Length: 338
Ligand code: ASP
Image 1 (cartoon, rainbow, N blue to C red):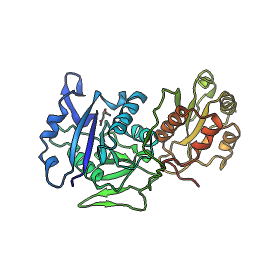
Image 2: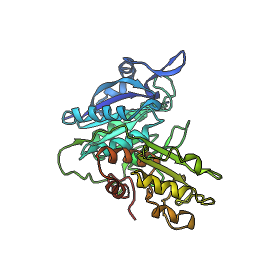
Image 3: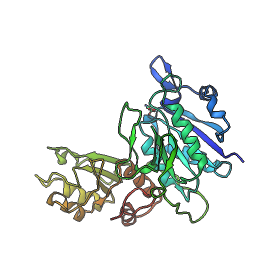
């Protein structure tokens, strides 16, 4: 029996058409684009059904609300299909894939995110292979987690980052090996594929619009300017530090701010500006105060995963000690516990 895969089209370049203001998604047009790809109906392909989300968005405009709609669309059809392919703009695909990895609790079917850098309506589009291969991966059923296929590589969704604005291999996963590579054959990396931690039926954890901020340190940063931002109004902050978690400590301005924010319930997670490697708070004197001030180590998590995880844990309604604890634990393969 042929597998049944649900294609969720959320917007993004893959289905965009030229408009007066540049490429934009056009409601109702995507089914016609798919009809022009005859391979999608060849004997080796699974059966598929297209669901077009409303509104279709450039992924720069995707918010927590759309993460919830995508999660709900999967949840509502979970028993009807063997897997899901989510077509999404590349700009924020890694954030959405990270968020969905946390929201879909007890997931035990493939959810593959993909898209393209060149629209399907153009001759050199990379969307055709990205879609066809994602459908085959979803139908294969070996990778029962949220993943992201792009340019020949299947990556864990919450480990992926967009690393090229114009390359056709636009995503990378510097801290985790690909789950599969697609050359002449699709080769699965069984050792890297997660074993789903399933303890019951699929649950959908809806996210709330939690106030979260990302702050990137740079040489000469004047932390005192952030005093009015780092208040109890901001529930979670991802601090992108230098190297293994280092911050400038020339005027001792940041630590008191972190201490104050933590006392008010704000969780500050330390990630690195380096795509590869992990944060080790305390290795250098310039990071040793962070822990004492209440900061959490993001270890080798991407900023995308850290942001999504903060949304998830705050939306669960946990208290700050519980959130601090879970931020440093591996929930969906998003970090490596040392
Ligand atoms: N701006 C587009 C988007 O993220 C880019 C893309 O899809 O490649 O929706």
